[in-house]
Length: 268
Image 1 (cartoon, rainbow, N blue to C red):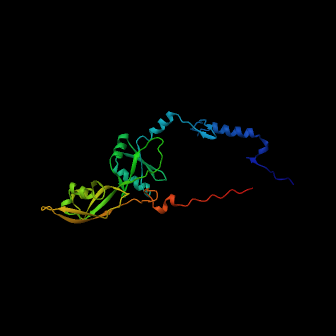
Image 2: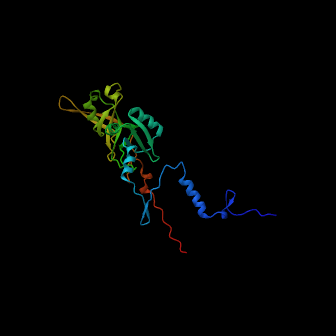
Image 3: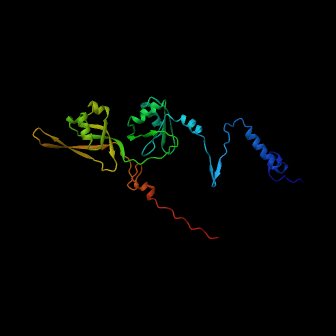
């Protein structure tokens, strides 16, 4: 009775029937003759055991052309849904061409021209669901990491505001008790909603957030009458008092997590 063949086969050809050089040549020939190959080999160098590649300046210039109209943005807290943000930004930025994103929370807003991109960066501020969109111009070699922020933009509501303060001068005076006022919303400016005044302000997150403001209203006799105003914040960033960084709480801070003890090496 004939014994079944043993060993490794390539197709129906036993491996020992052809030399290693023939196999290597066949693989290399298929690779070099492939019609799908669009990239060419650029030999790296090795220095002190490290593999180093050195792209040419033209490579950097050509690669930067595609991204020169791009603004990079992120949020201090939870990453919003990509499709919702994309729809929102297309509605407020008519010159926006495309929006792409990374899984770690960075968004790339590509505009039609460099001027369009610079107008969006210099304009604003732009807020989405109460959170400011932190944005900057894309540059080659940009590190994708969030910066430490002390001041942020928020919307506040001033309730029980007397009617005489519903002016540009009155609103900026009262809102200055919370932070640096920027602008009211359109309804506040038109005085068509008098339940509260809604104003965008810059606040210092290292300071205590005011819940109330007392307006000392002067009278014609040189006296003052106090009036208490309630302050509501539509959104406040999470703040870590350990690393003084926005976007997470103390219990989530990596500085508070115990370091794992390294096990001592086992003697053999």
